[in-house]
Each structure stands twice: as C-alpha cells, then as structure tokens.
Image (tube, rainbow, N blue to C red):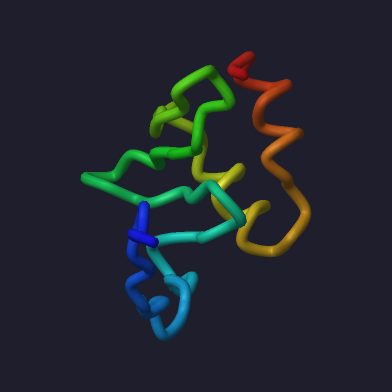
Length: 81
C-alpha cells in the first residue's frame, strides 16, 4: 500500500514576541511606534485574512500597554473590522 502523504516533524518557535516600550503585542494584533506614529496591525477576519494596519493615538498605545484598551475598543473607535 503506497502512502498518499508523508508526515514531517516540525518545530514551533521558542516563544512569542514580547511587548516592550515601543511595541505592545496582543493575541493577533500589535501596536508599534514607528517614526513618531503609533501603528496598529491586526489579522483581518476576511475570507483569506491578511495583515491590516491603522494609525492610532499615543493614548491608545499606552492604554493597551496597561491593559485598559482592547482590540474591540479600538475597532469601535477607529471603525475597522
């Protein structure tokens, strides 16, 4: 009997990216300070997905870093989906 596929063992990354003073990393989204602008990047929920980005305020970055602002809050405020 022939094999239809072969299983190859893979490895997972050692750990996920960590938040720091210039970037907050959430589950499927992040806010990073680039050239004085705060850019929110998130995984789109569209059919084929993809990364999308939106400029947000410094206050939103600080709120996300403190745990006071969520991706849901930002999606309502900046009207993205």
